[in-house]
Image 1 (spheres, rainbow, N blue to C red):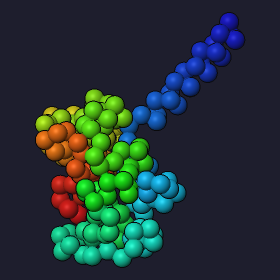
Image 2: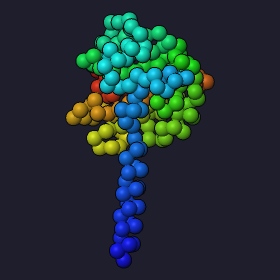
Image 3: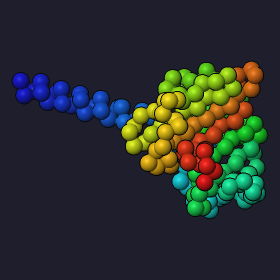
Image 4: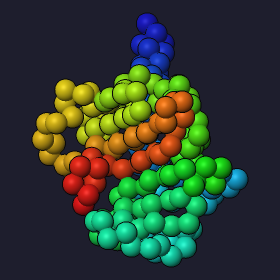
Length: 180
């Protein structure tokens, strides 16, 4: 009897640990060079460290957004990375921590991130994850007031008419909505 209880407890702990990996984490809000996964720019990283990877950026005069070579745009909050935006120029140069990149078909994003998206429109696919509740945000919940919108992680892709990714945005809800 005691062995059975211990085995069940062990299986419960394993299952609980496995499920904690579901959802989005800070590690998902990162990009790396396509040919070198050690060259990383990640959400929360200091601007100085991001520019060691990307070089010096040009201020776009929109919020605290800077554009860098190879189609990368970074949005800063208090000199820390709060948003990463990949454009068509980043194709074959940068990819997300999950291996997603510009030019990939929409179905590849759905296979990677699943069907718990906020919105799946013809040219847009958005995922939002509440790190407090450990749940994906549904469309009906998106407009509600969250206590801390920086704890809602967002991955958003835009697609061309052929269904291939043109842009990828990795950010938090506050930056996505208020640009700060």
